[in-house]
Image 1: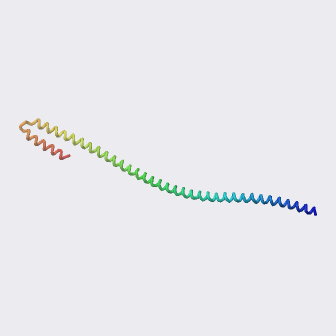
Image 2: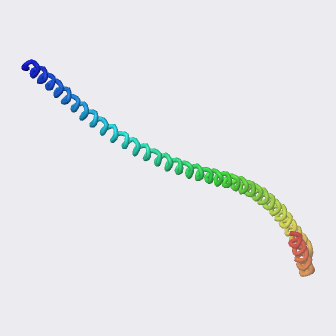
Image 3: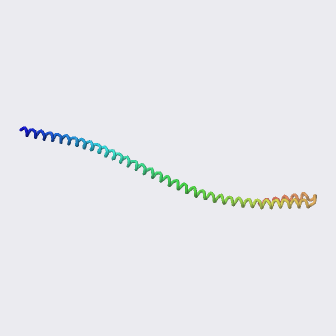
Length: 147
């Protein structure tokens, strides 16, 4: 019996050692499962946050694209307005130059008429001076009305 007892005791020890080892493995596996579960939960949370951030960034991107389109439309409109105003400025400058030329021509004609009247008045005798002044004023009036 002693042999049997010894065998049983040895078997019990062996089984106890295996049980202790299996309990250690079980604890280790449970700890690994807990870590993996926490990691999986964190990844899920991170994935959800990443998805929310992606959606927010897509909204911001769309908003910026719309703002850019509006800015480009506004820029195109301003360029068009600028070209139109430049054309009007050029036309106005041409018109101003033409008017200045007409003014110079008419001023020169006026000066010539005034000189001609003065010469005519000087040429005539003093007795007909009043008569010449009336005629001169009539000529000046006629010339000014032509302007």
